[in-house]
Structures are given as C-alpha cells and as structure tokens.
Length: 290
Image (cartoon, rainbow, N blue to C red; front, side, top):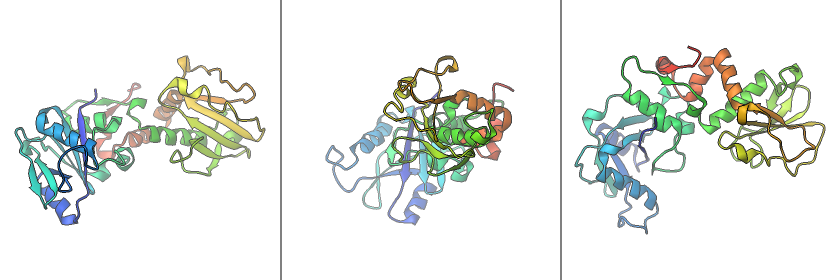
C-alpha cells in the first residue's frame, strides 16, 4: 500500500548549512525573500511545503541532504522558522526519526528519486512503498516483490539484460544482444533499446510498462528492412501477442512479466538490486515462489 509521501531535496548555498539542517532534524525550503504566492519561481513546491504545516501527521517526509537521507514526520504544531536569511524551515519530530539512511543503502536511489523537483509528492514505488516499508518495518514483516516495485527506467534495464542473456528468440543463440549502441531509455525519442544482435541484425526495442493501448501503434509508419528486428516489451492480455497495425513488420512481442519471472528464477539478487535494496535489506523481500 502506498504512503502519502513528501520528498524534499536540500541544496543549500553552503555545505555546512546542509549539514547543519541535517544535524538539527530540519527541512528547509528556499523562500528567495519573496512573498509565498504564485509569483514565486516554484509555487508548486511552496504549496506542498505548506501542506506539512496544515496536516503534518498525514505525510511521511523523505528528506535528502547530499548523501544522507532522513525519514520521519514533521512535529505537530511546528512553526515556520527562517534560517540563513532566506530559508523557510520545519522541524522533524525527533521521536519519528528511527534510523539514518546513507544513500548507498539503496543502489537505485539516485535514479528513482524525483530528478527535477526540490519539493514534491513523488509517485514512484520506491518512494511511496519501498522506503516507507523499510521505515515502518517490524519483525517478521516482508514486502512482496512484484514488477510494480520496479521503476520504469529499471524495467528498461531489465529488458536489455534479458536480450543479452536470452535474446529476442530464445531458440536462437545468435539472437542475443551483442552490444547496445545507446544508453537505455534516456532521451531517445523512438526507441528505448538500440543495439546489435550477435547475428548482425540491428535491434530496435520499445519498453511499455504503463499502458497496453500505447504500444499498438508502434512502428506504424516504419518500412520493413530485413536487417532490423523490432521488439515490443509490454504486458498484453494473457501475454498473447497483440495485433500491431503495421502488418509488414514481424514485430517480436515479449511480455515483461515473463522476463521478471525468468530473473526471479535465475538471478533473484538482480531483482532485489533493481527494486533498490542493498545487501542488508534483502531479507525484507519475499517472492511468490518462496
């Protein structure tokens, strides 16, 4: 079950200011010395910060201080403070700070945390399910591993790894991916995975982990070329290959859930790493096969 989470990243002007905030169990938001209204640069961030004033008990706060993380609740009836001239601050309830988390505890943290916001309500499973579970964890509790715990970027990486190990045709060793020519995902507009198979064919793949209907029109306007292989990684109904609009192309359809199950059977540690947990937390994960 997802938790109501507010994420805040601290990038104060000086390193010792960030360290001071961390040591005092405070969160800080840059006010720029301006009124707190829609004329500010990041009004959305201010509105979210304001939610903590009104309903601090409703939100779990994940606060990042360079390479350290605090997780806890804001103190009830906390008053807004002003630190270093331009920062609005709120106080964590010290009783709510159970543990201190170095970011290296979570191998994928840098990739799955909000990238562009300094204050926001995140929606990734790691931020709303995995990290809150670790924070609230009690003896004998475990979180069930599913593809829903994997970030979209991580699913793309998992699909690429599958191509390396099994290929786009598991009956043909030479269909395995020899190398990628571009980084997975990132800013590529039309493809998520681009590379070459051991048989010399160019591999062009799309990874659609969100909505089945979004991939039916993929490759609709592309002309067939014998030296290219087009792949769609997604999850269709009953894992059956959907009817793609472009009838000329032999589009390979590979269900994401079948790839996930393959790695659960053959390399469970990789799934644990991709969920985002270091060695010390791997005992908190349970799998259907257990």
